[in-house]
Length: 73
Image 1 (tube, rainbow, N blue to C red):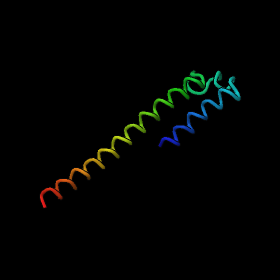
Image 2: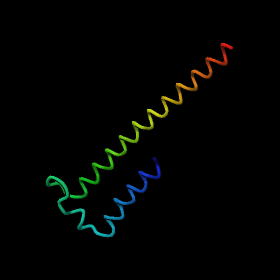
Image 3: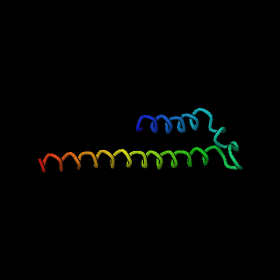
Image 4: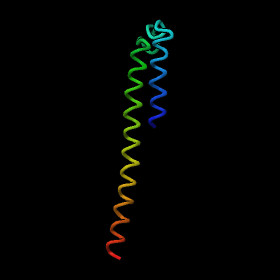
């Protein structure tokens, strides 16, 4: 997930460096590219945080059950 987000952010930086006028252009519903891409970065980060939370909770639950099984046995 870190690599994906890093590449996504690097794309943002690359577009700003290589063609800054592209970020000034209207992309979606009257919003410029910088705004759309910035909101996309925030939304992707939140989605990744939710995915990470689900993965961590599942692992924590599995480890909790495993420790209960070994302490009872």
